[in-house]
Image (tube, rainbow, N blue to C red; front, side):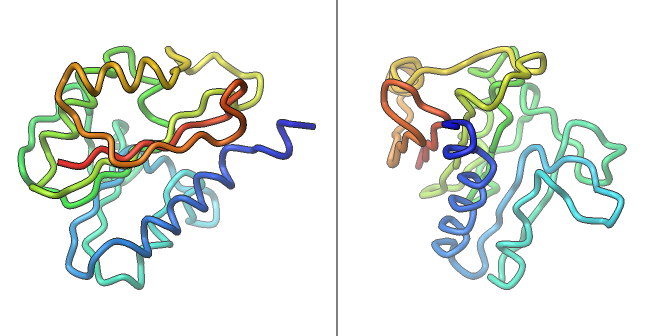
Length: 171
């Protein structure tokens, strides 16, 4: 029953809508892990539709170039000072070198830019794709050690039984 009440995808969509409302016209937004198109041409994993009417440059990306987006591997990503917002939803838990990836993403931000991260903690029972289940303590300790400024941190679910985390890191 709790899995139905605290599903992570609806939480992700709500957060994407909230972020879209805050993004300034003219901003450049990079989405990491946009995913493959469905049969109808829509994207299950992408939140681009929430930004379409916002007057922003929205760049979909995925590690797999065959998905039709810009191909980005965040572990080797080396851009600097390019994006106002980076959306990294349900990605870092699938990356073995997540620390390196997170540092690369923050380096790609312009001054005042934000990396928006959603990490599933409990998202059903298929754990075969994930390397990590994050804790709030791990995330906060890593960011503090690396000099990253967490400006928002939300727990979806309960503190003792979180379903997902939302974290904003602003430069």
